[in-house]
Image (cartoon, rainbow over all chains, first blue to last red; front, side, top):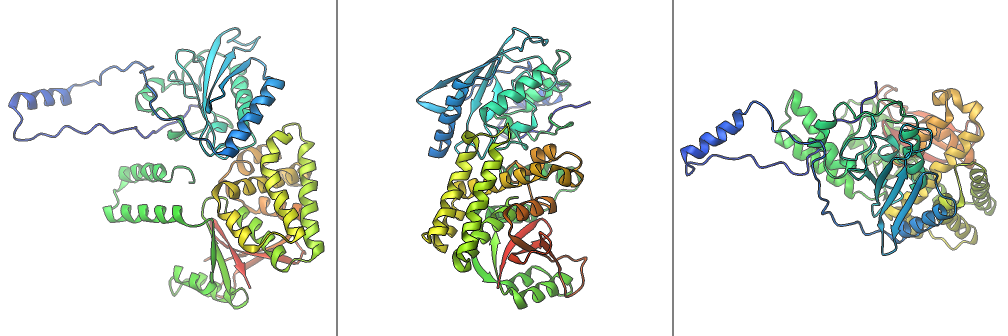
Amino acid sequence: MPRGKKRTQPEEVPERKRRTTRRTKRAIEEDEAEEEAPEEPFVPPTRPMVDHRPLPVLSPVAQRRLMKELESLVKNPVEFATIDAKDDNLARMIANLTGPAGTIYAGEHFVLQFTFPATYPIDSPEVVFLPPHVPMHKHIYSVGHICLSSLYDQWSPTLGIRGVLLSIISMLASSPRKERPADDADYARECTLNPKDTSWAFHDDRC
Amino acid sequence: MRRYPLLALLTRRKEMEAQDRPSDEAILEQLQEIKSADQAPLIAPIRETVILCQEFDEHNHQRGQINTVSETLSHYRAVKRDGNCFLRAFGFQCMHQLITVGSPEEKAHFRDRLAKIYATLLTFPDMSPMILDDFYEPLRDMADAIVAGTLTADDLLQKFNDPMESDFLVMFLRLVIVAHLRTNHEFYAPFCGGSVEAFCTTDVQPMGRECDQVQIIALASAMEVGVEIISVDSASGPRDPLRNVFPEGMPPRIHLLFRPGHYDVLLP
């Protein structure tokens, strides 16, 4: 059975508390109690992640390409998807998806966020679903990260926004049941804001 | 790994820690290696081939093989190790050779091949001028300038060392391979694990994917440019490296040195 991803680099490793002679006995005991706590505290799968990262500054080539892609998407839209782009900064776009008719997601509303790197289209965009508008899917984590090879190591500059939208819609259309990845809770604890930091392992040709 | 060398190192380090933690010196050395690889130019200036002998110890067959190579191809250009080395080396050397010693016919042929391949690409339903032009136009303009005699070898080197421009040129060469494999899919399918389409998606179109024999044959055949691959390999004899010319029977215009996982440009 395909099962997405594994191993991420945490954004920041919390500094391990160090004991010094100056600290009181009580503080040490508290620390010990903490360390000996048999179970890790429960972290809800959708831990709030506030994105404070500045948006990339696009190269002129990237801007030109994104303008052309937007034009093409207006002229010839992708079914079940509409793009919201702000003229002042093309580095971030929102796509509103509707569950494709005739699938288990029919009529549901999902929100996809694209963040384009300065080196787009050579490097892939960061594409995530924005909670809570995340489809219940075997390869989509509740934090919004998507296990889809064409977003990571099989990205090709020829795909573009249209290619990504089509892949995601076909991923939804072929899903037989609504479920989360088996490691959803673990992933939510480990992952960073950027799904490209995760080293994804793909178990079939796409996920 | 091209995109996150440090991340890759950290991941690798984690894996190694699980079994046997390397010394801090080894880690530092590795970091230094990655750092210097990151700063290496995409196409380096010309150096003497014999320098490469230093990479191998005295008893290694590869050392003798490099010596043999240096007798006829005394110079080389190092190409950055980023998974695009074959394409970058091929593209650069192909055009450099045209600029320096190419006949007017060869120059026009190069330009016409590109135009023809672009036209072929446009016949595929998943391609469009919107997708292709960013990659095709810079190369077409260079080919035109080569024909007109307005592109110098220095301009070429500069373009190939600009990360963005260089990657766009590499990308078009990837599309040249896609066009050739798709057009001749019946011939190539058995060498592509059965499906040319799947092979293109996983092994041709993504940037940073290394080229193997199939991609080399496809590119050389599509461009109708003979390329000789000289492989120094510890499996071959003490003096003679393995030599292959693609496409077979065509006189080679480009010579590339292959050491497992990497290609550099060789020059007379």
